[in-house]
Image 1 (spheres, rainbow, N blue to C red):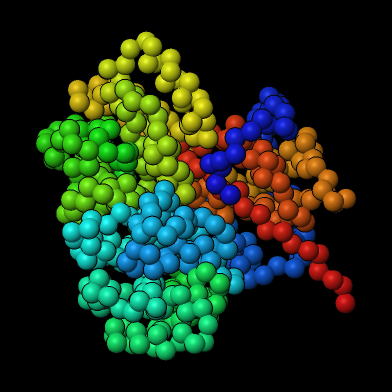
Image 2: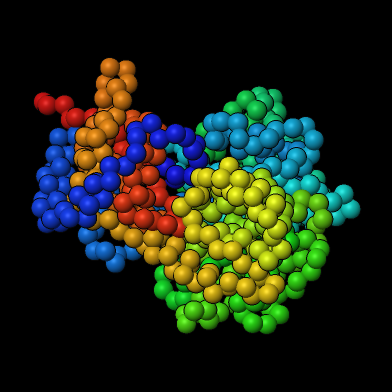
Amino acid sequence: MPDNNDQEHDEYGDLDPKLSEKIAELDESEALMRANALRAGLQDYDLNEEDLDILETATEDPDAIVYLPALPVLAIVGRPNVGKSALVNRILGRREAVVQDTPGVTRDRVAYKAEHGVRRFTLMDTGGWEPDAKGINASVAAQAEIAVELADAVLFIVDANVGATSTDEHVVRMLRATKKPVILVANKVDDARQEPEAAALWSLGLGQPWPVSALHGRGVADLLDHVLTVLPEVSAVAKEEVGGPRRVAILGRPNVGKSSLLNKAVGEERVVVNELAGTTRDPVDEQVELGGKVWRFVDTAGIRRRMNLAQGADFYASLRTSAALEKAEVAVVVLDVSDVISEQDVRIIDLVLESGRALVLAFNKWDLLDDDRRRYLEREIEQDLAHVAWAPRVNISARTGRHLEKLVPALELALKSWDTRIPTGKFNALVAELASEHPHPVRGGKQPRILFGTQAATRPPTFVLFTTGFLDPGYRRFITRRLREIFGFEGSPINVNMRVRERRKRT
């Protein structure tokens, strides 16, 4: 559960000031012995293979880097109005993507977490673009090509009632040239009478068409069963790199000063800077020496593509942002202080949180700020960025280079937090103190107990709690806040996940 939403009054009270001292003064070997006893108690509960894997891979080595496996990525591509959004909603089991009869309805989100059976994967919806009427074939193919670059497998959706169009054939030529698995989906097959229309799509040369009705759900379970035979267990495209210079993505909406910041850091005009929003197109990976260290900066172009699509710019910006985040360890989100903090700014920050990367907020154009704007800005930060109050802030001017040196300590702090591992003994001692100080509320006559906790991964810090019942989101946020208050974690998202387990029945 990333701690990136639902800010609310802390109903569990303020932190006991003595708790930090208590945890700091703990005898670690004694705390570990107690934690091991709790862990041994899990033998009385029904644990599955994934539980056992978590318990086995948990380590006490403070320098160990453990990633949770990168979820495989499934892209959905197809021309406008073939039912991509309806299929996204059907797979997710909830209404997330906007469904409308108008082709090319722009949406805010691109990637969603989905599951089928026991498998989880990332679903990348490429429907949120507005086609350029003159070059629709090229536009659809370009978006499909980007999606393919960022995916492990592709669902190519065709409207079975319309059949294969010239646009579909244009995309197929591109898809067939890739090495990625492509599954052909014949949508809008609402009953058996329409099956022949689906069979006609064998002519596209992508193999068996899978007939489905995204609207009614017909055939979708069978399609997903097949998808899981094609998707790898761990993503090949979202896999992590380890070693080398730390990788920094510079993110932000168009024209906030991302390229100026990179140029100032590099000390030369490496990126085209133009007053026209969205001029960055090509990828810019640059080794930069800052603060006596070498860093690798990834500008948000992220993908080798020269596109001049005025329409659908937000959609492509989201894809470029996703691509840059895949390559990065920490994101610097650049905000223009001369402008109001916008929904798009918050959306970009939320993309960073969903990706699990470390986060630094760079407030650019600080030299242009007057007293009136400063007052309003502080209010906006308090209201719109409360969910990332833990992120280091730097106030800079990318144009003049003012305070650029403050970026390095902020990056180092965020990455150190991202790498932080809390010893199992200390974590369980903290959880026990919190449960004693503020027990979980009784729900339905039962009070869930936390049996044992461990840090399953770093980058980002991910904690797993084995419990006897579901913990309220508010209670998990309470644990997350206490983790921050005692151990810091400035600049890093924290995940607190639950595994609810029942006591094994005695035979």
